[in-house]
Amino acid sequence: MGAFTEEQILSEHDYARPHVEAGYRLHGGFDANDSYISPRTLGRAEAVADWTEQLTGRGWPLIDADLGMFTSGIYPNTEQQALLVRAGLGRRVWDSMTIIGEFEARGRMLAQAEVPDLADIVVEDISATGLGHLGKGLLKAHGWDEGGDPASGLGAHDLMWFAARDLVFGKGAYPVPPIPETLGRPEADRAMPLVDRPYEALLMLLANVLMIEVN
Image (tube, rainbow, N blue to C red; front, side, top):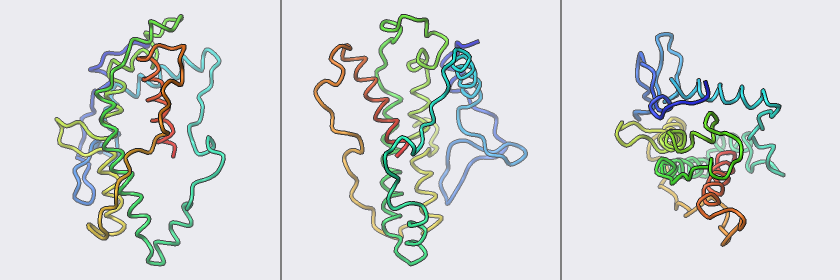
């Protein structure tokens, strides 16, 4: 199949019950067997599976986007953070979860990102690939995954972090910490001078999103 409409990419399942945690109304929902279903995956899951099959069928295995991409592990690691919480020193964990939630909310801007037509610079036909759908609902779905679809009134990854934080510590356990302006790398004037600016901007955006997601 390969080619999907924006309506298909953004389509939702019929949920048996809504997703509510720690008082937050969140996206996605549960089926009749009480299994969680991620939002906007009725058509998107099929699309991703199709694109993955095409890619691997051409001899290109998927690249694991995990902590193995970094030269050193995270600090403090999971065990160290659990030790801090058990010792009553949870302020750092609270701050981290709050900051992550705030940055997830900013990810909604992906839904409004300007996406140039990559077919203009790619020789091969990309109409039935993930690249060919970035401006046809795929980036919009990602942005809504991060910061929520404003029309739905439901929280997304942003409020999920706050829900997890509040389940551990309780609401308002600590003050909201100062939020950094950015987690991305400082931008140079041009990193890819041989590529026209609109395409470079998109590639840099996706690279920064990847590193922030993995981190």
